[in-house]
Image (cartoon, rainbow, N blue to C red; front, side, top):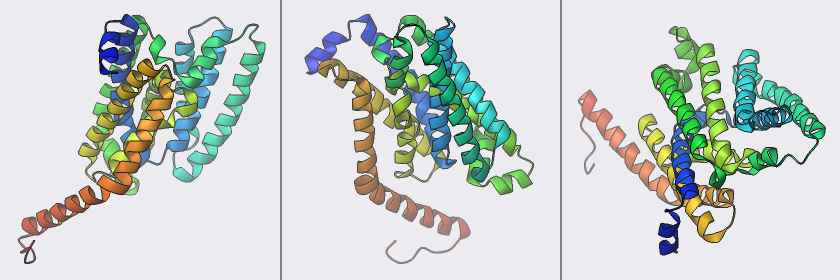
Length: 294
């Protein structure tokens, strides 16, 4: 199997798939950390569903489905951000917008005179079919997304940990929420290339949720989330190539297995060590003496 995987690396479509997978995994891993911390899993699902609507509309009018996907997620992010920022408002707004958008998607597919192969491919992911041009487009979107996230990282982290205090100190919480929704829109548009609309939660929820089980430190959690996403995407691509099964099957299976391992085996031990070190660090900083045997 290893020899077969090495031979496959000589093919352009494999190189393109791996390059696209690396970009998508890095962006998804970083964004996933905030999605989980801000309880925005439902919003991710809505962005993916409405991204599909954008793709269906783009195909109907003879435009690239990737452009339609990005447009659909962006418009949805703006709607959700403008209509509902707080958690109790956001879920209702997401549900309303998603229902309307899905209705439009069905209409676009009905009006399309032929079988919409490209639109249905977006439902399940087509990373082994990406071209060099697709890779460059993904790289450009990913670079802009990470650059914007880097600019708002500190205030966004503050607003995520304690939004009330952040707002009281003058942090533009509402604006940051809209900006993050747009970042999510770009991440969704990329992740769909791997797992498709129907399995989008795999890359934008599971890595962040797994990282939370391994550390309480935000920076370390973001790094672990990226590494987990990379392992799932690259591993999924190689397993798909040597078995001819869909990439999404292996990406979801790997991510689920890693999550279970982190939750029930590795996580409790690691978090216990981190908590102990954090407590000892606090005692040292305050000048108190740690208990005997610590």
